[in-house]
Image (cartoon, rainbow, N blue to C red; front, side, top):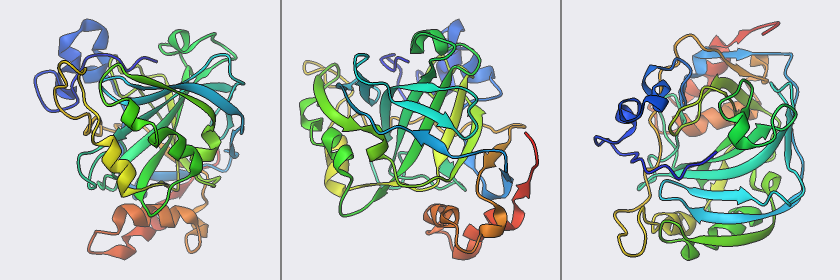
Length: 307
């Protein structure tokens, strides 16, 4: 998947609302019924007992960190040991291809997905392609069951994980569009929180051409990032050194209509008292006047036997 496309994510005449008008190959961006990201309302979650755990192996990999002008991208070296994503809602094995960072200019927005209308400072997405059916991300991208995106929200904290710091410590090397920095011996699973609980739905890429071939898996706990790391992210520019344009932050697509899609979870609603899913949603709702609203996910969640 390439995110080098020169498209603004601000509300201008080349922003997300206009993508489908700029290029006929991007018509799904305006006409699609399974677009991403979405806002996750706790009341719509369906418990699916048929979903197992998500498994991501712990291989150490090498890759290239790049300022694409739209996002911060870490693309895995194809010669590195494969990092595979299996389990959960997936019927196939997927090979990790790249990591994308989306974030805001301020701490109250930046994530692509939102929870009950609440945005987070940023979102990290691991994109993987179906390597049992397809030979590459470019081949898998427009195809059925082609791509999975494992995503987590940013939460501000005093310390972040060592593997995340392998990326953020090099951000000063990619201030301008097109600049790159090689990164070695990083574990993608080491970036992610320790959790087996998630939500999932069928959606699209969040950049043109908005291919509706992505299974989204949203882990139920955030990753921690420091204010100093957010400061480094917010120094990055959309343009090159000669024409830096404006800062890269606010590089997120707004939530899209859910229509008739289901959003499933592997957390049983009877576990609402102690479940970490309750904790996750409390992060999204902590600024709301009714803090107990976090429990609504379990009070109104519906169990399903088969999907």
